[in-house]
Amino acid sequence: MAGRSVQDVLGTLSILDRISQIDLPGTSLQRLLGWSISSFATPTVSGAVVDHDLRSGQYDIFDVTRKPATGRVPGTAMSRQKPQKVGYVRFTIPRSAEVIPLTDEDMRQRRGIGENLGLTRNGMSYIEEQEMYLAQRFANIIEFQAAAMLRGSYTFDQNGDDLEHRFTGGEVTVDFQVPSGNKDQLNMLGAGDIIGASWATASTDIPLHLININAAMIQLTGQGLAHVICRGQTWNNVINNTAVKAQAGTSSTPFETINRVSAGEFTARLRALPWITWHIVDYGLEVWDGSSHTFTRLLEDDHVSFLPEPNSSWLEYIRGGEDVTEGENGPKSFQYGFYPFAYNTFDPSGVALAAVFNGIPSLKRPKAIAYGDVTP
Image (cartoon, rainbow, N blue to C red):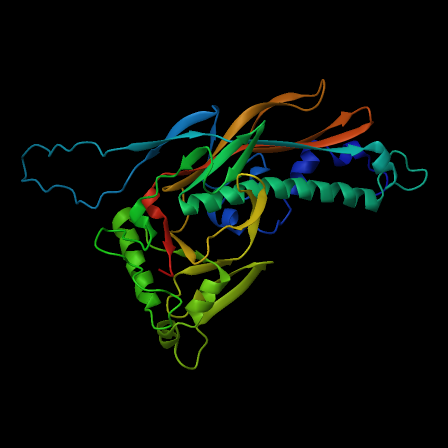
């Protein structure tokens, strides 16, 4: 490590390369949806992501049809059909921008004696830790947005120059247009609540609830249930459920597989319904509550999120862009999404580690998401 300069380590390409390799904790929702900060930190972005030059705009909502094509007698004219109705959602892309000053005085304490132009292993580790810290903060924004979309909306307050994100109660609301029938007890088809009994009661037929949610999603969107996201207490209720255990068999565990993803999050599959992947998420974020930042779980107590396999037919992430000048007299360029960089500073002498981020989810088929209260 010794001999590498601060400028070498903090070059934009070096930062992008290291951040793209970081496995950050508490990012399971964005990884599931294909929106990880690591992929946003690379020039070529994979997954359902579209770039947008303007700060505001709109995206289309386009429902599938369940009607078959019209049959016609041979030799007759084609049956004329009206175009499918297209709705839209207006959006304003939120912006995040932060800078961390790193002074030469502080960095010098982490260099070896006589190595004024190079970094020791401790100096390198210090910079990498600061990069991870900055990347985690921006990843937390994406994770918050993912959780908010699964809930159906989020809000924010303007506090001076800061935009304070919160799940409810803010001045401005970002509404993803999830139908009311896809919330609470999930009257998704207008024929009655699918979740008609509490999952905390062992005799509740949870497998039947899941099968009915799957059927409703197929009717509404053409895509079936593939993922369930819940808290640990809910998962405990599920694996102790009488019907779940009975369908697994008396000699087997209720779950077929269970894998720890990172601290506070793991995935599993039930033997009763192995085609569904469960994501057990108990972590949270420090979210603005109107007066201070308070630790808040990403999923509300006793709530569960249900969704199909993520793909671009119903879900995308819109990356906004902005002009970035990397320090005084530094290079200027237009950058989309997440862009970290560093530049020299003076008084005191040092470098600044900075990043900007512009992006917002777009839910093109709001009926594809259900957010249910499983303890009515």
